[in-house]
Image (cartoon, rainbow, N blue to C red; front, side, top):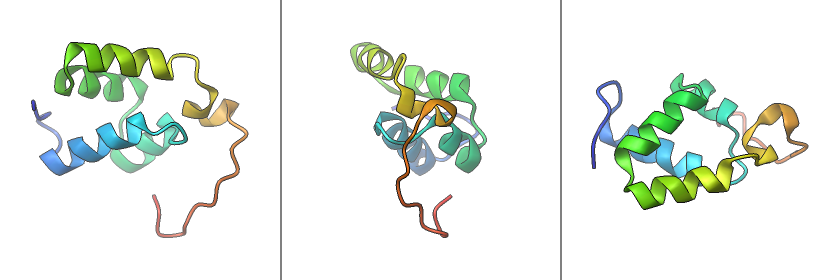
Length: 82
């Protein structure tokens, strides 16, 4: 696994995990890690196999829940959760 210079391996693993989750918007990743969608995409591209990256891109492209502005999700969020 290739690790980005700005993040520890554990943080990269968490970013990838959150990016794969359907209900985690890119805004949550930006809030927690300071990464915009392009930064998440770069991390996914450099740390996943090509086929896995392409599968992920196909999965999140156009998915409303990955963008908070277009999502109507009202899931509970703990005060401790970033």
